[in-house]
Length: 283
Image 1: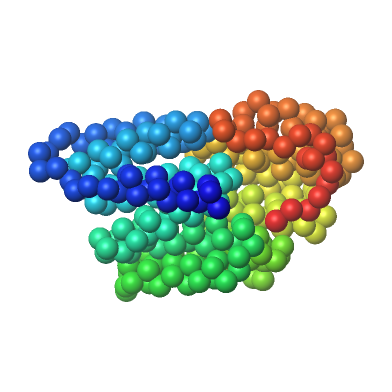
Image 2: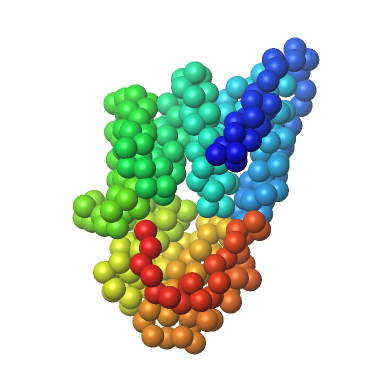
């Protein structure tokens, strides 16, 4: 509870005051580019610091959308750190700002990540509520644009599957997830493909289909390499380590664990090998 109070106070400090009238250079863009490089490399703490500087710079020139995006990106960095409570606070504030500025696309994405945060915490009511909010914002943004509709439908199919799996350890409509996989394969969106492959691996792992899970995780690693999102490697390697241990291959399990340990994002606590090798099914 004290942690939540501290974060709320921090947000209050960040958001205090009006923007100055004197225009300055677009330092928020400079900070944002720097923060994104830190983010991709897995240096989440420095990414957060840079996004906070970008937020302050955006506020000084009254760039409301830029400031809201920095808040959302801070939330995303906390999300990748596994700190869902902190992430949810920033996503909630970002969503509020995006609604004010009538940015339906960004509002829907912030709401989607809020739903994922609550699903990770096991709060089904809030997870379903924010997912509905995400869909509502997305539908308003899309209107009659068929191209955006196809992309949105597949995107939220994956988000819903992730929420369902975190809450219930199963996905109700795997065929829709397969359709999304086909769509993003044709689109060559390797960033989102890595997310889908990881989810497919978790589904197979929950069924004890270890060989299939390993195949999907190797596909995820290939997509991570193509998208250059280095921060995803450690989590994927940890999954490969756990599955290898479960399959009785201790040597391979240790191999993947050591690789995951070496490339883990800064600020992320890697569980001890004893926990990884215990073969517990996790959401």
